[in-house]
Image 1: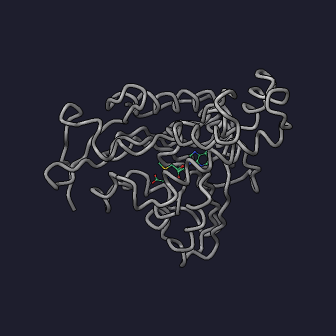
Image 2 (image 1 turned 90 degrees about the vertical axis):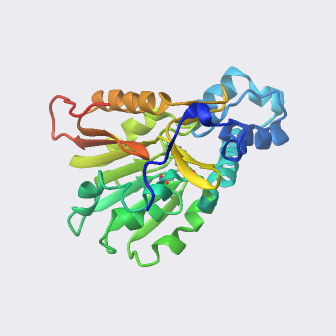
Length: 299
Ligand SMILES: C[S@@+](CC[C@H](N)C(=O)[O-])C[C@H]1O[C@@H](n2cnc3c(N)ncnc32)[C@H](O)[C@@H]1O
């Protein structure tokens, strides 16, 4: 296993292959404008949430302009967002995944929480894609796991990754609008997902806390890099590519992690760990029985 082949942001060409892939925003706009033209101002960050879409519909009088009812509009916008995620993440093997350089260790920080669950524990994973991370996180093949992803293509591949797991259920949809099938999960995890362009972070953090039982565990992570090949050698690059500035922003992952911690601090949880690991920044929290919030760990 290779580790620590650090490259620096200034070594990189923003036009290199890993950056030529389209952004979720661009994919969304391309698909959405085929149906609605350029006159309806919807951005990807509105499309994961029916509440936000209904605001756009009212504010911009979409019914009068385009002649569709609000339910149809919400559905069309969601389908455009789903198209974008299917294109970008429907086949995970096309992704420049930094975890490939840390295959056996990327999850070491969170493994004590995921592998120590009792046999009758229930788990919810959001943004789990085709479920490949589940294989490493949960040793017990009988554990009851619900997995949600906005990409229908990714969820259709769960069977390929999790064939030996006997109690996995897959759901397609945005977490913001998902109708939960339980509200007493022992563990919630959402890795490298709340940093996505379209996510309503505040709504997702609040919802995740509400779906875990008192005393249950919440695990989040924020992407912090990808693989960049230099002379055929894969190297780790830390940071997040910004489509707005076409530069690699080393501070953005930390800012998003801070935001998640702040959102958690407004809830009835204790943040037990914040850890800047080679592939991502992990945030681990525990839902309180009741009482005040406290934070351990630093960025
Ligand atoms: C970068 S991938 C991370 C996949 C996996 N958890 C990992 O860390 O390798 C983000 C995943 O979240 C999904 N996603 C993005 N926004 C979502 C939302 N609002 N609700 C559910 N899934 C979402 C995407 O389709 C994608 O599969």
